[in-house]
Image (cartoon, one colour):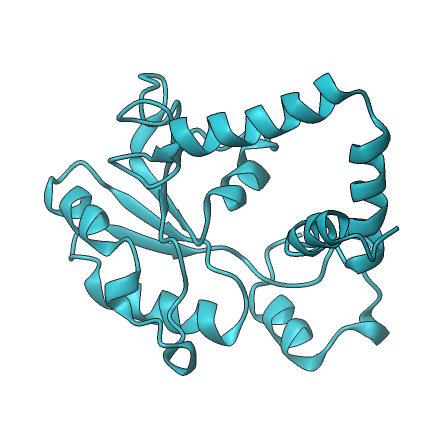
Length: 197
């Protein structure tokens, strides 16, 4: 059935989604062809509506339907603390803890000269504007523990003005992780970031 051009096209497009390989894409395509037509159309309409209505927040770059995202528009949030992340989906990890009550800033990418991604491709003008306003007391760097994440963090460290506290997420061993299976850099960072017991 996948040799039918319309089905093959659907499988190809579905397989472009993150974490969806050809086999999963084929299963999804077959499901969409078997499910009631109104269910398939509702999915297509939801995708189109989200694409039409959702845009970057003017302040932080998170997903928004208005000028500001729900976080930036919430008067209960402490926007004097800004947690810098790579992409909007990273925000969900912090929000799921229900403990962080500050603001965010989405870079949109990480520095990667080999891929042609320089500072001009990052959402830095809005961050500079926030820093210059004087409302930011602390910047928390939450870039991934990768070469690109470290390079981006180093670049950001240089642009944070004096008087603004700069912190970085702790790194180390995952909960339930086995020491013998951890790489030496993870073990080193866990040791260097040790805290009083």
